[in-house]
Length: 322
Image (cartoon, rainbow, N blue to C red):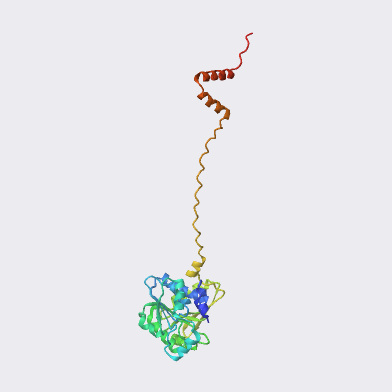
């Protein structure tokens, strides 16, 4: 049984959801539901007894546009009788509606229609002849299972599929009696048996059985045997290292695996170009400046004499005439 911690830890994969849903039954649920969809069969879906939601989550992936999906469970509500109350207290004390809904929301955006209470609510809440697939996994008491099978008969379409859980467990004799009673006296045709579940129909079992046999014979991971009992052909399947069908991860897993956003790059402005350096003029010689000032201040006669002398010094000396 799942602990409270296990029940409340956000699941990343379907297998993280506590519950009993073997790989072979995952394969069979997927095969029956997909076959209906491929053949154009449309109808509502129903699960009676959801526990933490493992199989309900799986079925929900097959809900088609326009189809209704209903689940029913006591959750933390009151059981209708003492025997059912004792059963719930012993086996399902950790189950609450909040846990189921949180698990379901981890994989789906919208919840199915949830009926909180005993399975006796179902016939008044689900329309007759409206369902294509019904999974019964609620009380193990004979009286309750007998009634749930009768409800499934009334709710299913003519070729709809019913799945009865725990039909052969040693601790659930009430389910075994109610199941085989339905086969022997109430018109239920078994299609196949897995380790814990019986798959049946009140329609013609032969077409779906032939298709199932063809599928199983092509697999190397599925042990197959066929028996006859009380006028019924019974196909028995058993996993041989079978891998579960692919199922998308939960929203928690997707969020955990998403890369963290990288921070936006900080734009560093280019440094402004340095202003062009002005050419440095050589400082004038001090003597030249003094002389220039002196020339400007002397009388014109003296100034002219100075300039003539300066010009004479700058000319090359005259060469003698040979």
